[in-house]
Length: 160
Image 1 (cartoon, rainbow, N blue to C red):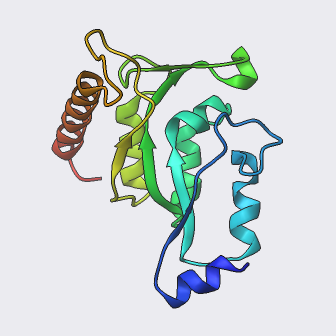
Image 2 (cartoon, rainbow, N blue to C red):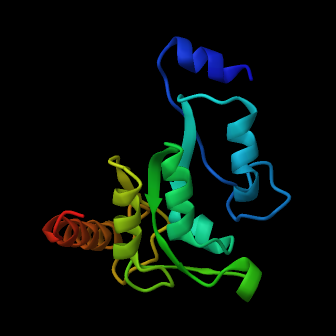
């Protein structure tokens, strides 16, 4: 209630990242997103949509992207994949983009259909052999190359 008017006055966009892990009682649990956004409606408040956290919470990520995208609430995306979810498996594992439960190409298609045209930020990368520093250069290079290939494939699709 205090931040949104300031953001509007200065043309700043506020983004809300969900609690990670997405446990129901956390202050910014994904289940509370809509209530938080609806409490003070504004075009200046939206989401840092984290594909991994949403899947970890047991959400249908493609349907979720469509719902928040229709509202114009996806401002930034953490693009990552996981295996497992808390409701069905009791936990999850952070994995490479091509190795989890999510079909990342379908996620990109859902983002495009929702009108999202912002950045994709790789996040929570698994260790790759030889990555001996905090920057995980090999894992990052692999993820960026994988995303570029997905974006190239997406651009080659016929227009809807």
